[in-house]
Image 1 (cartoon, rainbow, N blue to C red):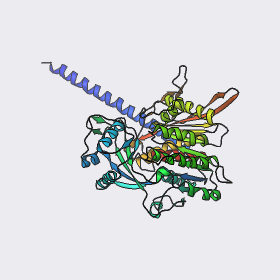
Image 2: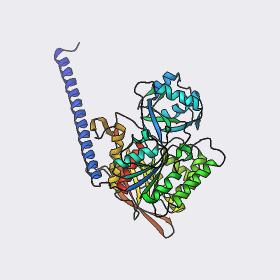
Image 3: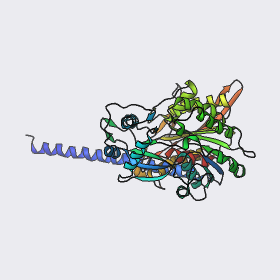
Length: 482
Protein backbone atom coordinates (compact mmCIF):
# COMPACT_ATOMS: atom_id res chain seq x y z
CA UNK A 1 0.00 0.00 0.00
CA UNK A 2 1.26 3.51 -0.78
CA UNK A 3 1.97 5.87 2.07
CA UNK A 4 -0.86 8.33 2.61
CA UNK A 5 1.25 11.32 1.59
CA UNK A 6 2.41 9.62 -1.67
CA UNK A 7 -1.12 8.54 -2.50
CA UNK A 8 -2.32 12.10 -1.96
CA UNK A 9 0.52 13.41 -4.10
CA UNK A 10 -0.44 11.07 -6.97
CA UNK A 11 -4.12 11.93 -6.64
CA UNK A 12 -3.30 15.63 -6.62
CA UNK A 13 -1.00 15.28 -9.62
CA UNK A 14 -3.68 13.44 -11.58
CA UNK A 15 -6.15 16.16 -10.74
CA UNK A 16 -3.75 18.85 -11.94
CA UNK A 17 -3.08 16.94 -15.18
CA UNK A 18 -6.80 16.58 -15.81
CA UNK A 19 -7.36 20.24 -15.04
CA UNK A 20 -4.58 21.26 -17.45
CA UNK A 21 -5.97 18.95 -20.14
CA UNK A 22 -9.45 20.44 -19.67
CA UNK A 23 -8.02 23.97 -19.79
CA UNK A 24 -6.07 23.24 -23.01
CA UNK A 25 -9.08 21.60 -24.64
CA UNK A 26 -11.29 24.48 -23.54
CA UNK A 27 -8.79 27.03 -24.86
CA UNK A 28 -8.49 25.14 -28.18
CA UNK A 29 -12.28 25.04 -28.47
CA UNK A 30 -12.44 28.75 -27.62
CA UNK A 31 -9.74 29.59 -30.16
CA UNK A 32 -11.42 27.50 -32.88
CA UNK A 33 -14.77 29.11 -32.11
CA UNK A 34 -13.17 32.56 -32.23
CA UNK A 35 -11.58 31.67 -35.59
CA UNK A 36 -14.92 30.44 -36.94
CA UNK A 37 -16.64 33.68 -35.91
CA UNK A 38 -13.98 35.71 -37.72
CA UNK A 39 -14.29 33.60 -40.87
CA UNK A 40 -18.10 33.77 -40.79
CA UNK A 41 -18.16 37.54 -40.33
CA UNK A 42 -15.66 37.94 -43.16
CA UNK A 43 -17.76 35.77 -45.48
CA UNK A 44 -20.80 37.86 -44.63
CA UNK A 45 -18.92 41.05 -45.46
CA UNK A 46 -17.72 39.53 -48.74
CA UNK A 47 -21.22 38.54 -49.87
CA UNK A 48 -22.65 41.92 -48.82
CA UNK A 49 -20.32 43.77 -51.19
CA UNK A 50 -22.72 42.91 -54.03
CA UNK A 51 -26.49 43.34 -54.20
CA UNK A 52 -27.94 41.13 -56.97
CA UNK A 53 -30.04 43.17 -59.37
CA UNK A 54 -33.30 42.35 -61.19
CA UNK A 55 -31.61 40.57 -64.10
CA UNK A 56 -33.91 38.56 -66.35
CA UNK A 57 -33.35 34.79 -66.18
CA UNK A 58 -35.13 31.95 -68.01
CA UNK A 59 -34.91 28.53 -66.33
CA UNK A 60 -35.79 25.06 -67.66
CA UNK A 61 -36.69 22.19 -67.88
CA UNK A 62 -37.64 19.60 -65.24
CA UNK A 63 -40.27 19.93 -62.49
CA UNK A 64 -41.60 17.48 -59.92
CA UNK A 65 -42.96 17.09 -56.42
CA UNK A 66 -40.23 15.93 -54.04
CA UNK A 67 -41.35 13.51 -51.33
CA UNK A 68 -38.76 13.46 -48.52
CA UNK A 69 -38.42 10.43 -46.26
CA UNK A 70 -35.79 8.88 -44.00
CA UNK A 71 -34.37 6.02 -46.02
CA UNK A 72 -33.76 3.41 -43.31
CA UNK A 73 -37.23 3.49 -41.67
CA UNK A 74 -38.75 3.25 -45.16
CA UNK A 75 -36.70 0.16 -45.97
CA UNK A 76 -37.71 -1.39 -42.66
CA UNK A 77 -41.38 -0.72 -43.42
CA UNK A 78 -41.00 -2.22 -46.90
CA UNK A 79 -39.14 -5.24 -45.54
CA UNK A 80 -36.01 -4.41 -47.53
CA UNK A 81 -32.95 -5.92 -45.81
CA UNK A 82 -29.34 -4.75 -46.19
CA UNK A 83 -27.85 -6.73 -49.11
CA UNK A 84 -24.82 -8.97 -48.73
CA UNK A 85 -23.12 -6.96 -51.49
CA UNK A 86 -23.57 -3.44 -52.79
CA UNK A 87 -23.83 -3.03 -56.53
CA UNK A 88 -24.34 -0.20 -58.98
CA UNK A 89 -27.50 -0.41 -61.14
CA UNK A 90 -28.19 2.02 -63.97
CA UNK A 91 -31.93 1.30 -63.72
CA UNK A 92 -33.89 0.16 -60.66
CA UNK A 93 -36.49 -2.53 -61.37
CA UNK A 94 -37.19 -4.24 -58.01
CA UNK A 95 -36.40 -4.27 -54.29
CA UNK A 96 -33.14 -6.17 -54.76
CA UNK A 97 -31.85 -3.55 -57.24
CA UNK A 98 -32.96 -0.81 -54.88
CA UNK A 99 -31.19 -2.32 -51.86
CA UNK A 100 -27.94 -2.99 -53.71
CA UNK A 101 -27.91 0.39 -55.46
CA UNK A 102 -28.73 2.29 -52.30
CA UNK A 103 -26.02 0.48 -50.32
CA UNK A 104 -23.47 1.21 -53.06
CA UNK A 105 -23.86 4.98 -52.70
CA UNK A 106 -24.87 5.02 -49.01
CA UNK A 107 -21.53 3.63 -47.82
CA UNK A 108 -19.68 6.37 -49.71
CA UNK A 109 -22.10 9.13 -48.69
CA UNK A 110 -22.59 9.96 -52.37
CA UNK A 111 -25.72 11.42 -53.93
CA UNK A 112 -27.38 9.45 -56.73
CA UNK A 113 -30.55 9.53 -58.80
CA UNK A 114 -31.97 6.56 -60.69
CA UNK A 115 -34.91 5.79 -62.95
CA UNK A 116 -37.35 3.21 -61.51
CA UNK A 117 -38.72 1.25 -64.47
CA UNK A 118 -41.54 -0.53 -62.59
CA UNK A 119 -44.12 2.26 -62.35
CA UNK A 120 -46.59 0.22 -60.25
CA UNK A 121 -43.96 -0.78 -57.68
CA UNK A 122 -42.66 2.80 -57.59
CA UNK A 123 -46.17 4.07 -56.80
CA UNK A 124 -46.47 1.48 -54.01
CA UNK A 125 -43.18 2.65 -52.49
CA UNK A 126 -44.29 6.28 -52.59
CA UNK A 127 -47.62 5.38 -50.94
CA UNK A 128 -45.76 3.58 -48.15
CA UNK A 129 -43.37 6.52 -47.74
CA UNK A 130 -46.29 8.92 -47.29
CA UNK A 131 -47.47 6.93 -44.23
CA UNK A 132 -44.21 7.38 -42.30
CA UNK A 133 -43.66 9.91 -39.56
CA UNK A 134 -41.78 13.01 -40.68
CA UNK A 135 -42.49 12.59 -44.40
CA UNK A 136 -42.99 15.89 -46.23
CA UNK A 137 -43.44 17.19 -49.77
CA UNK A 138 -42.08 20.27 -51.53
CA UNK A 139 -41.45 21.78 -54.96
CA UNK A 140 -38.77 19.86 -56.80
CA UNK A 141 -36.84 19.53 -60.01
CA UNK A 142 -33.78 21.52 -61.04
CA UNK A 143 -35.71 24.23 -62.85
CA UNK A 144 -38.25 25.19 -60.14
CA UNK A 145 -35.66 25.03 -57.36
CA UNK A 146 -33.20 27.20 -59.28
CA UNK A 147 -35.99 29.56 -60.38
CA UNK A 148 -37.15 29.91 -56.77
CA UNK A 149 -33.65 30.74 -55.51
CA UNK A 150 -32.93 33.19 -58.33
CA UNK A 151 -36.22 34.97 -57.66
CA UNK A 152 -35.37 35.12 -53.94
CA UNK A 153 -32.09 36.76 -54.96
CA UNK A 154 -33.98 39.49 -56.82
CA UNK A 155 -33.92 38.16 -60.39
CA UNK A 156 -36.87 38.50 -62.77
CA UNK A 157 -37.53 34.83 -63.55
CA UNK A 158 -39.35 32.92 -66.28
CA UNK A 159 -39.82 29.20 -65.58
CA UNK A 160 -40.11 26.62 -68.36
CA UNK A 161 -41.17 23.40 -66.64
CA UNK A 162 -44.36 21.31 -66.36
CA UNK A 163 -46.35 22.91 -63.52
CA UNK A 164 -49.91 23.53 -62.41
CA UNK A 165 -51.53 26.33 -60.41
CA UNK A 166 -51.09 24.49 -57.11
CA UNK A 167 -47.40 23.89 -57.81
CA UNK A 168 -46.81 27.57 -58.65
CA UNK A 169 -48.13 28.54 -55.20
CA UNK A 170 -45.08 26.76 -53.74
CA UNK A 171 -42.72 29.08 -55.61
CA UNK A 172 -41.51 32.60 -54.95
CA UNK A 173 -44.18 35.14 -56.00
CA UNK A 174 -43.69 36.81 -59.35
CA UNK A 175 -42.15 33.85 -61.21
CA UNK A 176 -43.64 33.64 -64.71
CA UNK A 177 -44.54 30.16 -65.95
CA UNK A 178 -44.57 29.24 -69.63
CA UNK A 179 -46.26 25.86 -69.05
CA UNK A 180 -49.31 25.15 -66.88
CA UNK A 181 -51.09 21.83 -66.89
CA UNK A 182 -53.99 20.35 -64.99
CA UNK A 183 -52.24 17.16 -63.96
CA UNK A 184 -49.85 16.85 -61.03
CA UNK A 185 -46.10 16.97 -61.75
CA UNK A 186 -44.04 13.77 -61.54
CA UNK A 187 -43.01 12.45 -58.12
CA UNK A 188 -39.39 12.08 -56.98
CA UNK A 189 -38.79 10.05 -53.82
CA UNK A 190 -35.90 11.56 -51.83
CA UNK A 191 -34.53 8.91 -49.47
CA UNK A 192 -32.26 10.75 -47.04
CA UNK A 193 -29.69 9.58 -44.49
CA UNK A 194 -27.30 11.16 -42.00
CA UNK A 195 -23.56 10.96 -41.43
CA UNK A 196 -22.75 7.79 -39.50
CA UNK A 197 -26.08 6.07 -40.17
CA UNK A 198 -25.71 2.28 -40.10
CA UNK A 199 -27.56 -0.20 -42.30
CA UNK A 200 -26.40 -3.73 -41.72
CA UNK A 201 -22.69 -3.84 -42.56
CA UNK A 202 -22.78 -0.39 -44.19
CA UNK A 203 -22.07 3.01 -42.58
CA UNK A 204 -22.57 6.31 -44.39
CA UNK A 205 -19.51 8.59 -44.70
CA UNK A 206 -21.65 11.75 -44.88
CA UNK A 207 -25.25 12.89 -45.01
CA UNK A 208 -26.79 12.60 -48.45
CA UNK A 209 -29.69 11.14 -50.42
CA UNK A 210 -30.65 8.46 -52.92
CA UNK A 211 -33.40 9.53 -55.35
CA UNK A 212 -35.69 7.35 -57.42
CA UNK A 213 -38.28 8.48 -59.96
CA UNK A 214 -40.50 7.18 -62.75
CA UNK A 215 -40.82 10.46 -64.66
CA UNK A 216 -42.80 10.34 -67.88
CA UNK A 217 -42.90 14.01 -69.00
CA UNK A 218 -39.60 15.52 -67.80
CA UNK A 219 -37.31 13.27 -69.90
CA UNK A 220 -38.88 14.49 -73.15
CA UNK A 221 -38.20 18.19 -72.39
CA UNK A 222 -41.87 18.89 -73.02
CA UNK A 223 -41.53 22.51 -71.85
CA UNK A 224 -38.81 23.41 -74.37
CA UNK A 225 -40.99 24.62 -77.26
CA UNK A 226 -43.37 26.63 -75.03
CA UNK A 227 -40.34 28.67 -73.90
CA UNK A 228 -39.29 29.90 -77.35
CA UNK A 229 -42.03 32.45 -78.09
CA UNK A 230 -42.09 34.04 -74.58
CA UNK A 231 -38.29 34.39 -74.70
CA UNK A 232 -38.61 36.92 -77.54
CA UNK A 233 -40.36 39.51 -75.40
CA UNK A 234 -38.75 38.50 -72.11
CA UNK A 235 -35.20 38.70 -73.55
CA UNK A 236 -33.34 37.01 -70.66
CA UNK A 237 -29.75 37.85 -69.81
CA UNK A 238 -29.24 34.24 -68.69
CA UNK A 239 -30.76 30.91 -69.73
CA UNK A 240 -30.34 28.12 -67.16
CA UNK A 241 -30.55 24.54 -68.44
CA UNK A 242 -31.10 21.72 -65.97
CA UNK A 243 -33.00 18.48 -65.51
CA UNK A 244 -31.31 16.64 -68.39
CA UNK A 245 -30.45 13.75 -66.06
CA UNK A 246 -34.12 12.75 -66.40
CA UNK A 247 -33.14 11.40 -69.83
CA UNK A 248 -30.74 8.95 -68.20
CA UNK A 249 -31.83 5.37 -69.04
CA UNK A 250 -35.37 6.51 -69.90
CA UNK A 251 -37.08 4.10 -72.36
CA UNK A 252 -37.22 6.45 -75.36
CA UNK A 253 -38.45 5.30 -78.74
CA UNK A 254 -35.72 4.90 -81.33
CA UNK A 255 -34.23 8.30 -82.20
CA UNK A 256 -36.52 10.20 -79.81
CA UNK A 257 -33.80 11.32 -77.40
CA UNK A 258 -31.57 12.56 -80.20
CA UNK A 259 -34.53 14.49 -81.64
CA UNK A 260 -35.21 16.20 -78.32
CA UNK A 261 -31.54 17.04 -77.73
CA UNK A 262 -31.33 18.44 -81.25
CA UNK A 263 -34.29 20.70 -80.46
CA UNK A 264 -32.42 21.92 -77.36
CA UNK A 265 -29.25 22.46 -79.40
CA UNK A 266 -31.19 24.57 -81.90
CA UNK A 267 -32.48 26.79 -79.08
CA UNK A 268 -29.01 27.24 -77.57
CA UNK A 269 -27.27 27.73 -80.91
CA UNK A 270 -29.93 29.99 -82.42
CA UNK A 271 -31.87 31.71 -79.63
CA UNK A 272 -35.06 33.58 -80.60
CA UNK A 273 -34.49 36.78 -82.64
CA UNK A 274 -33.47 39.72 -80.49
CA UNK A 275 -32.09 37.53 -77.68
CA UNK A 276 -28.54 36.45 -76.90
CA UNK A 277 -28.48 35.04 -73.36
CA UNK A 278 -25.57 33.58 -71.49
CA UNK A 279 -26.19 29.85 -71.00
CA UNK A 280 -25.59 27.97 -67.73
CA UNK A 281 -25.77 24.16 -67.66
CA UNK A 282 -26.35 22.56 -64.26
CA UNK A 283 -24.98 19.02 -64.25
CA UNK A 284 -26.37 16.14 -62.19
CA UNK A 285 -25.89 12.43 -61.53
CA UNK A 286 -25.42 10.85 -64.97
CA UNK A 287 -24.65 7.14 -65.36
CA UNK A 288 -25.40 6.41 -69.02
CA UNK A 289 -22.27 7.02 -71.07
CA UNK A 290 -24.17 7.43 -74.33
CA UNK A 291 -26.21 10.25 -72.81
CA UNK A 292 -23.11 12.01 -71.47
CA UNK A 293 -21.55 11.72 -74.91
CA UNK A 294 -24.69 13.20 -76.45
CA UNK A 295 -24.66 16.09 -73.96
CA UNK A 296 -21.05 16.92 -74.86
CA UNK A 297 -21.98 16.96 -78.54
CA UNK A 298 -25.43 18.60 -78.39
CA UNK A 299 -25.19 20.93 -75.36
CA UNK A 300 -21.61 21.66 -74.23
CA UNK A 301 -20.58 23.62 -77.37
CA UNK A 302 -23.20 26.28 -76.61
CA UNK A 303 -22.68 26.67 -72.85
CA UNK A 304 -20.97 29.62 -71.13
CA UNK A 305 -21.16 28.31 -67.56
CA UNK A 306 -21.17 24.89 -65.91
CA UNK A 307 -22.30 24.08 -62.35
CA UNK A 308 -21.55 20.76 -60.60
CA UNK A 309 -20.56 19.01 -57.38
CA UNK A 310 -17.53 16.93 -56.41
CA UNK A 311 -19.09 13.78 -57.91
CA UNK A 312 -20.06 15.39 -61.22
CA UNK A 313 -16.76 17.17 -61.91
CA UNK A 314 -14.74 13.92 -62.32
CA UNK A 315 -17.59 12.65 -64.53
CA UNK A 316 -17.27 15.67 -66.83
CA UNK A 317 -13.47 15.57 -66.91
CA UNK A 318 -13.40 11.83 -67.63
CA UNK A 319 -15.99 12.16 -70.39
CA UNK A 320 -14.06 15.01 -72.02
CA UNK A 321 -10.69 13.25 -71.77
CA UNK A 322 -11.50 9.58 -72.26
CA UNK A 323 -15.10 9.31 -73.43
CA UNK A 324 -16.21 7.41 -70.31
CA UNK A 325 -17.58 8.38 -66.90
CA UNK A 326 -16.86 7.65 -63.24
CA UNK A 327 -19.63 6.24 -61.06
CA UNK A 328 -18.13 7.21 -57.69
CA UNK A 329 -15.59 9.82 -56.63
CA UNK A 330 -14.07 11.05 -53.38
CA UNK A 331 -16.59 12.30 -50.84
CA UNK A 332 -14.05 14.80 -49.46
CA UNK A 333 -11.74 15.78 -52.34
CA UNK A 334 -8.72 18.00 -51.78
CA UNK A 335 -8.83 21.54 -53.13
CA UNK A 336 -5.81 20.83 -55.35
CA UNK A 337 -7.50 17.77 -56.86
CA UNK A 338 -10.66 19.73 -57.69
CA UNK A 339 -8.65 22.60 -59.18
CA UNK A 340 -6.64 20.26 -61.41
CA UNK A 341 -9.85 18.69 -62.71
CA UNK A 342 -11.40 22.12 -63.29
CA UNK A 343 -8.34 23.25 -65.24
CA UNK A 344 -8.42 20.16 -67.43
CA UNK A 345 -12.15 20.47 -68.15
CA UNK A 346 -11.87 24.20 -68.87
CA UNK A 347 -8.95 23.83 -71.26
CA UNK A 348 -10.58 20.99 -73.21
CA UNK A 349 -13.88 22.86 -73.47
CA UNK A 350 -12.14 26.07 -74.56
CA UNK A 351 -9.97 24.36 -77.14
CA UNK A 352 -12.84 22.32 -78.52
CA UNK A 353 -15.74 24.78 -78.42
CA UNK A 354 -14.21 28.23 -77.62
CA UNK A 355 -17.22 29.28 -75.50
CA UNK A 356 -17.03 28.29 -71.81
CA UNK A 357 -16.09 31.18 -69.52
CA UNK A 358 -17.19 29.97 -66.09
CA UNK A 359 -17.09 26.78 -63.99
CA UNK A 360 -18.54 26.56 -60.47
CA UNK A 361 -17.82 23.45 -58.39
CA UNK A 362 -19.55 23.12 -55.02
CA UNK A 363 -18.19 20.53 -52.61
CA UNK A 364 -19.09 19.77 -49.02
CA UNK A 365 -16.05 21.64 -47.69
CA UNK A 366 -15.62 24.55 -50.13
CA UNK A 367 -16.74 26.48 -53.21
CA UNK A 368 -14.52 26.84 -56.28
CA UNK A 369 -15.42 29.32 -59.04
CA UNK A 370 -13.32 29.89 -62.16
CA UNK A 371 -14.16 32.75 -64.55
CA UNK A 372 -12.41 33.93 -67.70
CA UNK A 373 -11.04 37.44 -67.44
CA UNK A 374 -12.82 39.78 -69.85
CA UNK A 375 -16.02 37.70 -69.88
CA UNK A 376 -19.42 38.98 -68.74
CA UNK A 377 -19.13 37.25 -65.36
CA UNK A 378 -18.28 39.56 -62.45
CA UNK A 379 -17.99 39.58 -58.65
CA UNK A 380 -16.36 36.13 -58.44
CA UNK A 381 -15.10 36.62 -54.88
CA UNK A 382 -18.48 37.74 -53.52
CA UNK A 383 -20.23 34.99 -55.49
CA UNK A 384 -18.03 32.32 -53.87
CA UNK A 385 -18.75 33.72 -50.39
CA UNK A 386 -22.49 33.93 -51.05
CA UNK A 387 -22.58 30.38 -52.45
CA UNK A 388 -20.76 29.15 -49.35
CA UNK A 389 -23.21 30.71 -46.92
CA UNK A 390 -26.21 29.68 -49.03
CA UNK A 391 -25.05 26.06 -48.75
CA UNK A 392 -25.26 26.22 -44.96
CA UNK A 393 -28.56 28.10 -44.88
CA UNK A 394 -30.20 25.63 -47.24
CA UNK A 395 -28.94 22.41 -45.63
CA UNK A 396 -29.68 23.66 -42.09
CA UNK A 397 -33.02 25.12 -43.20
CA UNK A 398 -32.36 28.51 -41.57
CA UNK A 399 -31.73 32.07 -42.70
CA UNK A 400 -28.89 32.55 -40.21
CA UNK A 401 -25.63 30.57 -40.11
CA UNK A 402 -25.32 29.16 -36.58
CA UNK A 403 -21.71 28.46 -35.54
CA UNK A 404 -22.83 25.95 -32.91
CA UNK A 405 -24.50 23.85 -35.62
CA UNK A 406 -21.71 24.19 -38.20
CA UNK A 407 -18.08 23.34 -38.71
CA UNK A 408 -15.29 24.19 -41.11
CA UNK A 409 -14.03 21.07 -42.90
CA UNK A 410 -11.52 22.72 -45.21
CA UNK A 411 -7.92 22.66 -43.98
CA UNK A 412 -6.29 25.90 -42.85
CA UNK A 413 -4.11 25.72 -45.99
CA UNK A 414 -4.14 24.05 -49.39
CA UNK A 415 -1.95 23.66 -52.45
CA UNK A 416 -3.11 24.97 -55.81
CA UNK A 417 -2.25 21.76 -57.67
CA UNK A 418 -1.19 18.17 -57.04
CA UNK A 419 1.86 18.69 -59.27
CA UNK A 420 5.31 19.24 -57.75
CA UNK A 421 6.33 22.77 -56.84
CA UNK A 422 2.85 24.04 -56.04
CA UNK A 423 2.47 27.10 -53.85
CA UNK A 424 0.45 26.84 -50.65
CA UNK A 425 -2.48 29.11 -49.83
CA UNK A 426 -3.32 29.78 -46.19
CA UNK A 427 -6.76 30.54 -44.82
CA UNK A 428 -6.87 34.14 -43.61
CA UNK A 429 -9.81 34.66 -41.23
CA UNK A 430 -10.16 38.30 -42.25
CA UNK A 431 -10.06 37.34 -45.97
CA UNK A 432 -11.27 33.73 -46.14
CA UNK A 433 -12.04 33.77 -49.88
CA UNK A 434 -8.73 33.13 -51.66
CA UNK A 435 -8.55 34.50 -55.22
CA UNK A 436 -5.77 34.55 -57.80
CA UNK A 437 -5.25 34.62 -61.57
CA UNK A 438 -3.77 31.99 -63.88
CA UNK A 439 -2.77 32.15 -67.56
CA UNK A 440 -3.36 29.17 -69.87
CA UNK A 441 -1.75 28.65 -73.25
CA UNK A 442 -4.62 26.96 -75.07
CA UNK A 443 -3.12 26.91 -78.56
CA UNK A 444 0.05 28.53 -79.92
CA UNK A 445 -0.37 32.28 -79.64
CA UNK A 446 -3.73 32.11 -77.79
CA UNK A 447 -3.87 32.67 -74.04
CA UNK A 448 -6.68 32.77 -71.51
CA UNK A 449 -6.45 34.51 -68.16
CA UNK A 450 -8.83 33.13 -65.53
CA UNK A 451 -9.64 34.16 -61.98
CA UNK A 452 -10.09 31.38 -59.42
CA UNK A 453 -11.75 31.91 -56.03
CA UNK A 454 -11.96 29.35 -53.21
CA UNK A 455 -14.34 29.90 -50.28
CA UNK A 456 -14.59 27.60 -47.22
CA UNK A 457 -18.00 26.20 -46.28
CA UNK A 458 -19.53 26.11 -42.83
CA UNK A 459 -20.87 22.57 -43.04
CA UNK A 460 -24.24 22.13 -41.34
CA UNK A 461 -24.07 19.49 -38.59
CA UNK A 462 -27.85 19.35 -37.98
CA UNK A 463 -29.11 18.57 -41.47
CA UNK A 464 -32.60 19.68 -42.48
CA UNK A 465 -32.23 18.56 -46.11
CA UNK A 466 -29.49 17.92 -48.67
CA UNK A 467 -31.57 17.66 -51.84
CA UNK A 468 -31.69 20.89 -53.83
CA UNK A 469 -28.45 22.02 -52.24
CA UNK A 470 -26.53 22.18 -55.50
CA UNK A 471 -29.35 24.00 -57.29
CA UNK A 472 -29.57 26.62 -54.54
CA UNK A 473 -25.80 27.04 -54.32
CA UNK A 474 -25.33 27.39 -58.09
CA UNK A 475 -28.22 29.85 -58.36
CA UNK A 476 -26.88 31.97 -55.51
CA UNK A 477 -23.51 32.19 -57.24
CA UNK A 478 -25.06 33.02 -60.61
CA UNK A 479 -27.21 35.78 -59.11
CA UNK A 480 -24.06 37.54 -57.95
CA UNK A 481 -22.35 37.29 -61.32
CA UNK A 482 -24.89 38.41 -63.95
